[in-house]
Length: 299
Image (tube, rainbow, N blue to C red; front, side, top):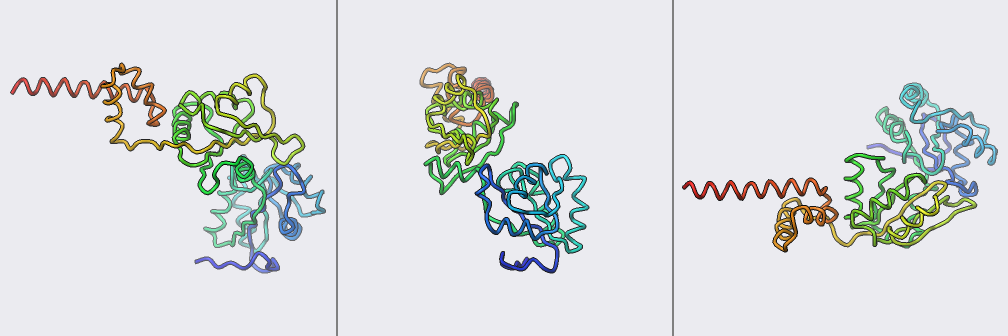
């Protein structure tokens, strides 16, 4: 079991990796402890050295800043680990917020721990919980989806899961894709779900748009979104059925008079399966019934 000293330790002795959150917009959101650590470590690793240098200059931090991002992490990792093993104290920051979300932070933290180097994570700013606390939606249980895939089956699977999620859902989206993503959620049955679209949190032009998925989809088709965006969607009230329940739901829909095509479209957002998958399932069940009838007749 790894032992760990208090966050108030003097930072002398063996190497240590510090995970240091930075403001998501307002420079005043930097913690006193975070500033102290950045001043006292021997090196700061940053996604964008220019942005981090602005923060450091604001707080009088003169520690050298090196680039460490998705494009350079694999190449630089061994050198960073060697410095940590040699006893150096290094801080990792992201462009904004808490490292480890949509950046190479987990790669470095895991490698440092595997090497036996102490990793100390500081609390601080993050757009995820900032958006959640301002949304008014339940915060005791929530799921964070990060950035969604831009296209393909994995994107549709994630979206279907979100529409059936019984917890508050939080995700990032680009301004260019926001309206289309809300359209997709509405098409999957979440059009009446309440959401908050948080733009430019803690910055001068911070805005929280509230409404239903369908309402805000229409709004952002008319008025293009700008800036960094976090979307928070209220929990659903209907969990996805278990796999063994899907055929029963399909049979019930068909028994009600729906065509197989209509039943497949109707059940897609309720089951988390695509309409084509359900349609194929219905065809297989029909084929099985026909085969069973023929087999019974031959006896």
